[in-house]
Amino acid sequence: MINEAFAKRFFNGRNPIGLRVTEVDDQIRATYQVVGVARNSRIQRKLRGEVEPRYFVPAEQPPAAVKSPTFLLRCGTGPLACQPPVLTQVRKTIERVDPALPIESADSIGERLAPLTAQDRTTAKLATTAKLAVVFGSVALLLAAIGLYDVLSYGIARRTGEIALRIALGARPGRVVAMILRETIGLVAAGLAIGAGLAYAASRWIESQLYGVDPQDPLTQALAAGLLLSVALSAAYLPARRASRRDPMAGLRQE
Image 1: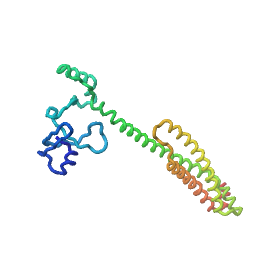
Image 2: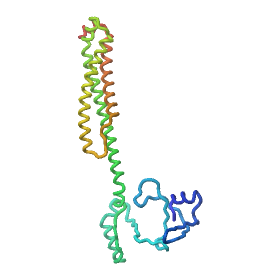
Image 3: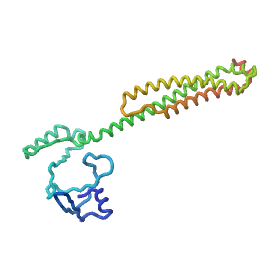
Image 4: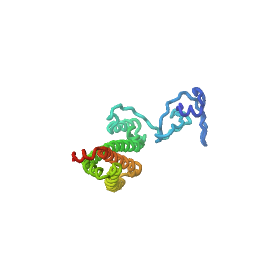
């Protein structure tokens, strides 16, 4: 019996049924006739990569010598099917049949696969945590942008009288808007500097709690800072531009 990978590599698309396979090593030379093709399966602790070509012969057929046979027992499909009491009963049954037969180990398939799939389970948990972190981080950034826009636009709107007075005294509207934008950039830059310092301190703590994870991503930090700066400029520019285009007397009367 050969697997699909064996048939694909050594028979190159031909029907292998009835053909012969010869095994040659230092001690034996044996020829077997192919009687079937089994589906590919992963064995011998190799759960990743391509499936290796395999062939299977009966354990009692010479010159095959199976020194450590493995018996598979189907004991049910439920989560509690092959628990320790069942395995203990299997041991007792084998000992009654042949007390001299040594039993090296008796485990469920899940217990045998657990060490091999531990990395995959850890990776899946980290991926879920990363997705949640991205979602919560995006929501926090959105809330920060909305709050920043509201605060700045409200503050600039309250300066309508000041803007009208400057224009009435001869200041050019464009210069007034540029002045407000410079003040806004300075204010936001100070806030971003403080936030960057706190983020760096927090990232160092996160790095000490995780293994092989770099919490510092300059691109992400630059994008977040750029977004907040763009929101701040929009929040300052739009109300300042509206105020600079109004009649200065109307703005003074409103103030």
